[in-house]
Image 1 (cartoon, rainbow, N blue to C red):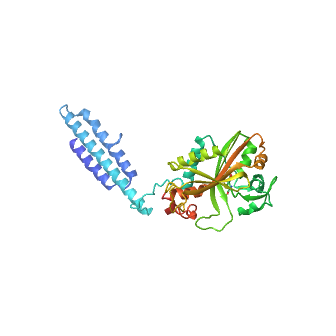
Image 2 (tube, rainbow, N blue to C red):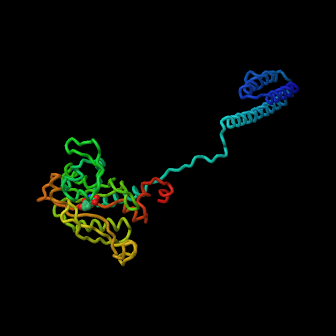
Image 3 (cartoon, rainbow, N blue to C red):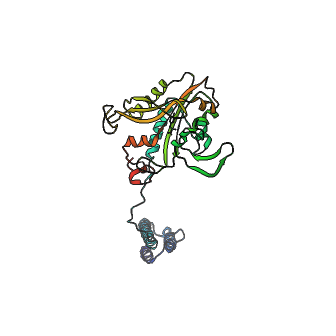
Length: 346
Ligand code: DAH
């Protein structure tokens, strides 16, 4: 029986060696060490052996079984590896090529600053509103106290949309500012209001380092009872100090915009020199920042608000310009230019 076992082992090992596929390996396994295989039928004879022989043959048969099982496992790995290598070769798969870069990207600098602006105003009780970029001429101009004959129309060069008309309000334009959302919000919600409107705006103009046809603005307004310019100054000083994380002062000068009366220009103390005067602020200590003023009564009326009961202020600033100041970017065209070498710096 010992001879039988050893010759079975030899035959099985030979068969394993010859085999070339996993399938035929499985057949060999069934044949030699399977439940109905040759080893099993040899072992059936153990019970007829003399008692002395039984443990010796029992031990030997276990050893042979273990050895063969190991040989099968080794062969499986061998065949699988060969198959994989063949596949890699057939697929033209270059295992040395580095894997794809796990690049998630990041938030655009304009959106980063916009979110910061929204957070700061949000914490002061302002709601963020949105409005259409393709706007009716009415909301963009008339509703803001800029009638068609008004010379102020020339202040903003406008893209008109060919052939498209709003049922109620006529011609359509690409909004030249975020101010139209003032009247839209007044109509929709009524007073009191504390709102900011960040958004994309468009002007028909030649592009250069400081002008682009597409840029971003933030409109803001507050309407309530007994609202004055003092509230505006306080809100803006707070906003700018939190945005720039330093104490920023605000200065107000007279200005002209048709939708406010009185109209104002707002400057803030230069971030570089703190107001002493340097090249950035052209030695004035102040940086021009935005337009503002007390909302004109015609605008309140357009929004369905009684100017005798309510009043408020409004402001509008360039978000794009703010981003440029914050990061010392000297060409506006870089921001929407889509060049990753630029964008990845933020
Ligand atoms: N809409 C103006 C512009 O784009 C900015 C502006 C000025 C907005 C004064 C206002 C304001 O709300 O009161 O040039």
